[in-house]
Image 1 (cartoon, rainbow, N blue to C red):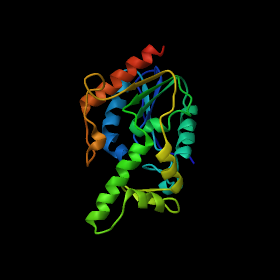
Image 2: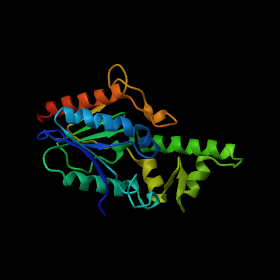
Image 3: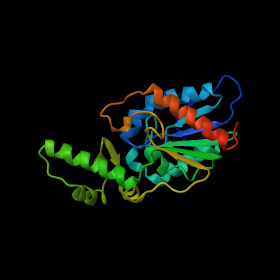
Image 4: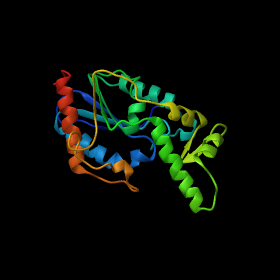
Length: 222
């Protein structure tokens, strides 16, 4: 099943296509506006930029509870394979957990995070919400329940396979790779994924685009 692709292209021929892999789950919603700004900045630099909806995301007709990390890895590889010309994969946070199966000329990762860390954060949020609703739960009891049925975490119904794979997932080695964080020695900006609501950081978007463009040139894409 073909999923929606948000694409922004330059006015002339593109130097390459930047395939954006957003953060996973609720973090993706908090960064989407900033990533759209980064895509427009990349188009101004002569790159096409693509932000795909993977199965279970946004406009997808597939239920998230029917999806796991393996399916996302295969879907992303299929998207990359359908792009003409050089592809640079730019992954943010948990997106780095699913970007290694795709074929690309180069990879760029912003603040990559392990799956266990993402899972712990969502489990803690669920425990807090349960406590406020007068329900007793713990990370251990929730993970036990997730072995047999989908588990609702941060508004996402995650399949048993997704929960199990997420707990063991780490970003895999790819090359050439630039991994960068936020801060004085990295991308200037705020960790929007920590906010309660979606936000927008135009300066961060511009910094992302500039760094991806510079890395692409370093990798021989000009």
